[in-house]
Image (cartoon, rainbow, N blue to C red):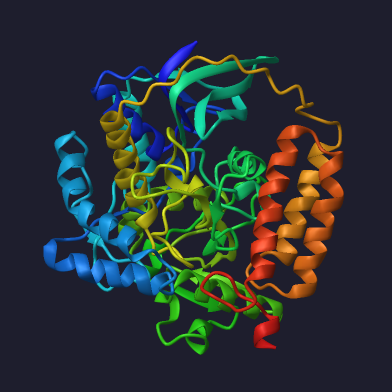
Length: 475
């Protein structure tokens, strides 16, 4: 089997890249680990940030740089914001309708976040794009290796229905998402576990900013599933308060912007307050019930299912891992550094736009902008691979105790590589990871390789920066 392009992942970044390839006659295969909708894009409650007009572009750039503590790549942020102007028109011309209200989220100077379905933007966009997608699809398929030789990608090795086989292509696009399953509490789709980053690390592909892990401050974690329920930033953008059991809006003790400070600041404030023995809640009582039900239908219905009488009753919250700013290093065309035909788009990539802390709702924008740039570069370069047969990696994919060790890793990462870090905890996590890797099947090993790189990067950055907060520096 040979394709013009293989895309690993079925989120918005992968599907949007496929759109332009398919429009230009490319035979494109999308491979997804589970079902096609089991992607972070589908669960994105927040919207798509798009600059309002030419005058707003420099303001959006400045907001993005400030949120990222100026650790961002400025030229990439400029590409992101300038191309957002075209994107708005393009998505709507394609037939998609956003809600009429444009909203404001934390760390934005103005309202520039476009929503659909109230708090179901990702789901609505994902469904819409999937209906139009003309790619070949291979679902319930695990990619366990990428076939690389002489700075060229030749395809992938996959495991499907108890069979291993290779699939070849002229281009490989990594669009597999982030690392949620590495942490005990996370908001990610259940399949998001950092394995493709692990393959990159194993192959010596450059990764960047691996210590930059973003925790969402407002998450409902009182549920049995591993994926916890995100409570969108838009709630606070429209007036919800973070309070403790005494009704105190304590976040103002940490930042004058209170609930509308950057995610890293709000997450640390909640985490520290909890460590002092307080309980923390999101107060949504200022919303009229009918408004709340229509503006945040997903949150309203799910919380009512958990017997929380919103908006009248406060919602118990905690931070949880949400988004990975680090990833596989790419250039302005989403091409992986030093490779001829290997690309990375979406959360798996590090374009540099997010810096040390992602600005709310810039992630879907990044998916759209840089997925298109990848497709355009592929079409422009017309690269073709010569056929080479690769032996299939015969490493054992699964071992009996993999699940046990994966759960221990999630505990370690939450405890020692989470919202607040210190040298001794990071060393403890590194030692655990190093000692455990030889005991694992290949798939578990890949996520441990990603975790190890995160820990090493966190150890190397001695000073706090954005989402990376070193307690020893602030002792």
